[in-house]
Picture (tube, rainbow, N blue to C red):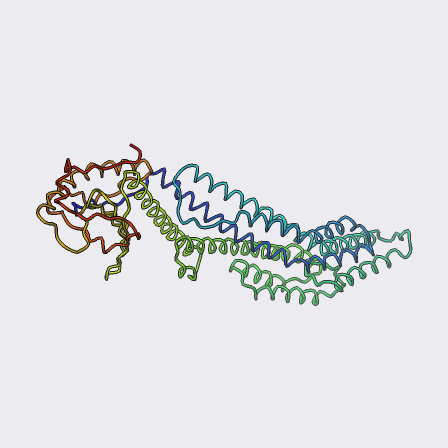
Length: 479
């Protein structure tokens, strides 16, 4: 073969930006697709919650009124639930994101990926809005119960604050108490909600302190950060020192309420972090699919930092694969555009584990250019004579091959010029050997997978010398 021309090709800044942009769009679109499926599954399972909410609303409507609009909204949502889910599912099915085996490097291709992502994001937004609407409807009965109880408690408070003045209706006070009891019974008979605020019954100071102590002590069993646990312990210490009901009431409304609000805030943050972590895991698994590394999908992570590092590494692996695939495609396109006919391929794995791929292109009568792709990204291009056996070239063949090498050197410069036009440049030149006799060699075409019926001419120096010129005539499709 001719003197090796070994290079590691790289993408121009623009081409790499296009590749990485398409990878990000594709990865995000696939993650969104999985999230859409999860949201629709959750929506499908909410009919039972809607039915319970409607039951509560109907109960409050029959006793206290004022729920007509909410009942109508919940009923309408229940009637259209399946249709809404099917509509979103149908739109998603038309835009299911997939992993592209190859990328086109162009601004138009990048824009297309962006549009595909925007479409899937829009579908996700519709699914999220439906879920929010369902959650609101599922909580409508509970919210109505809270409002009714607060209104009743307010009426009772206003009545009690009237002092010695008698109510306009002598039965008003009793009726209000019965109304409060009725609402509490209605609520407890249909649901059990911790968030319902019941009007406190008259208790002794010790009983009230004991109840509050037990409530705070239960919080210490939760998985909370040290700051919150210290806050609870400090509250328990202060609670023990209280000796007046008024101070206990103030302690409950200020200190204890703040603790519960802090815990609720912490739990909300934990839920957000868990959701964000789950999304990142999904992103990582999608990258594994894009890199065709199925075994890596089962990896577990101890924290967010480890997960983010794994995502970064997998992104680099995907980028490298896509870049090498694009560069290999460009090599094929440019070789064919310059008139070289692909006559054979092969893949070789050495004992060391290194993997190579070879492609053989017809250069002239009895000669070919062998292109070798290594797993490290190196591409070697060499010219040789064609035969169907392993042998060394004769002296006459060496002379012809040396002259052909000179011609190929010019063609190689044209090859790299055309590669650059496609966004592929030399990243590292490893070897660029001159056309000398020591590099003349014979290629055994029998080692390659050749398409059936492909006509291959072996090297024949006697026939070659009859040609008008020893210089290789290279045809180009666009000339």
